[in-house]
Amino acid sequence: MKKTMKMSMKKTMKNMLSMAAAVLTATIMTACAGSDELTDTPQQPENTSKTITLTTTVGLGGANGAATTRALTAGGVKTFAAGERMALVYKNTSGQTVKAVSEALKAEDITTTDDPLTDKKNATFTVTMTDPDCNARIRYIYPAAMAKETVATDASIDDAGTVDFTKLNAQDGTMGSLGSALDLCTYDAANWTSGELPVGATLANQLAVLAVTVKDAGGAYDITSGITGLTVSDGTNSYTVTRPAAAGPIYVAIRPTANADITVTANDGLIHYEKTLADKKTYEASNFYNVGWRMMPTKKTPLTMEALTDGTIVVNNPRSGMQYSVNGGDKTTMSETTTIDVSAGDKVQFYGIITSYIGTTIAGGSAEVKVYGNIMSLLNETGFATKTTLYATDTYTFANLFYENTTLTDASGLLLPATTLADFCYQGMFDGCTSLTAAPALPATTLARYCYQSMFYGCSSLETAPALPAETLPPSCYRQMFYNCTKLIAVTCLATDIRASGCTANWLYNAGTAAMRKGTFTTPASTVWPNGINGIPDGWTRVDAH
Image 1 (cartoon, rainbow, N blue to C red):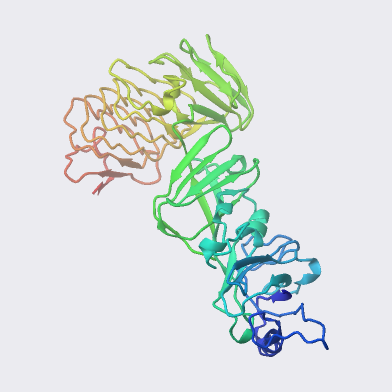
Image 2 (cartoon, one colour):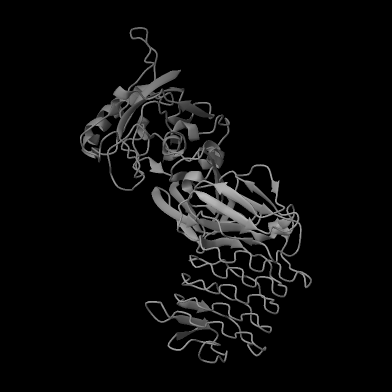
């Protein structure tokens, strides 16, 4: 026996329930196939269709706003939309689990009001059920797309048996598809006691929604519009967005998390980024989160210089075998000083196969630029992602590479992955980069003679030095490192052994003299530093690193 039932899903107006309940009781007593009073009399046509009015609440939280044609507003408020369907999973009189799907909502099924609290929160769904057992469990799944395509006849009526969470694995990042196809809400009732379908039901949202914006490593540039792939992982589940380049945010529906370690990867088709969130995250069901993440390029991203304005990038005296490509195109080998014409947004990537670039500089162009990616692509154009060592013979490896590049503003995304360094390897790397405001991380813990000598000499716009984790300093390793960094106000140095000859000679000469306030020097309490340009500048505040 088939029963056709209409369900009116409403957000508010619970004051109407008493009358609705009275009507339902009388109706369902003859409609439920599990009722002892169901009869078939020749004097009356068989009752094959009953209309049932229910009240339910749907919501995601977030600010109220004018409803749109989507199932979620920009503020994350849940509304009904034409074309949507709801699934209903129930037991039939043979004890089998059955899924029914409602007819698609039509515009006239949705109640509109002038009040944003109630507008498009009420809708009437029509669904046909076959021989339902009113004494068994029932579940509503909205939208129907989140129900399993096929529900096993012996399936339990719970998440495992009825919901297809794999639908969340591949998303397109838009609010429209998320709201209409993914944003799961459910309602469960243990039975239909006394022949009544659940009245006053509340649809509970089962997911959290992230509205993601992505920035570069320094945080100065929003790169969301270029992101075509994004994956969010919580250690158990992963959610991947694939989309064309478009304005953000990127919307991602996820299952709730509790103190989870969140990792994020992203790409724009050319550059790959990664991020592990510093703190464990709890994202609760029925909540909408605006999140913004700074993303570091991964080690598989080659050394890249991105143009922020139209102009040129110049490579002076390129070493043998040095190559470049623009926006992922074919590689071009350079044999003499090369000028590369660029437009804002162009990405120039560099490759090589030699061990020292002494005499080569990427400087003198007219385009404002930032640099990021793995510098090891200059040493091994194919295997650079796993290269983390500079050998003793690799002296002057990247010395003066960006010497006097006055249009370079940001190197925060530059990866210098070697943890063991070679003599003079980064000497003068950013010497004279007067516009540089963000430096790369310096993760190496085993240093070499003169390895960072004059690395940031004359970087007069730099305010914060990269953290220096090495504990033992070899001779002249930090010599003149921040010489004439006149705006510098923060240095963190974890060295405990600074006895080597000249290891910090003039390293903070004239540092911070043009800053608006005195600097802060963070270091272990046990380290004995001299005062002045060879140690902690006069007037700076010393802070215990531990």
